[in-house]
Image: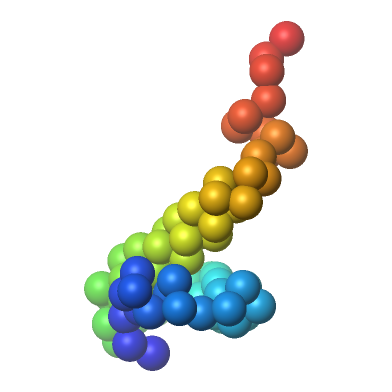
Length: 82
């Protein structure tokens, strides 16, 4: 799977972004499991590429949410500590 650029990601509909995000998370999980098991990965740089692509997709999702005025109040990082 080639690297996704921000321009491409912004052009995706939300359902396609969610689908791609879940596919990338599954692929990352498999690669990390392979490394933990002591196996060698065919392309170790792919792990970094996947992590960055996941971050790009999440960034676009957050930008769209901010534009629509949806807050991340349910995000544990944004809750007030008491």
